[in-house]
Length: 97
Figure 1 (spheres, helix red, strand yellow):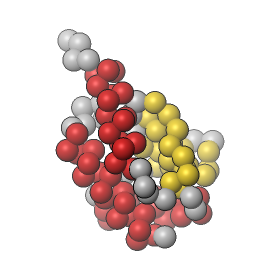
Figure 2 (spheres, helix red, strand yellow):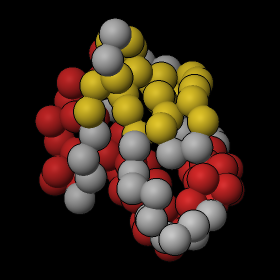
Figure 3 (tube, rainbow, N blue to C red):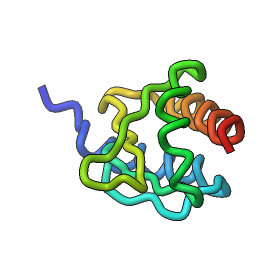
């Protein structure tokens, strides 16, 4: 069954990028729903990852890139879930900065 998940992932990527604009991130790299986010202060990444569950998020290091963290939601994530996760990410970023 082809649900057009790959095409939807590109639209969801744009929503994530839009929701994260204005946050203290230097760069968002990647395509679709596999993204690397580089904060303006990369030294906050360990705190972000360790405190993410307190904000209802799961973040992880981006392999071979210590100055970024990974965002990799499931392909079936809804637009509302993306908006909620981005609000929580903003709250987390503010809490650890």
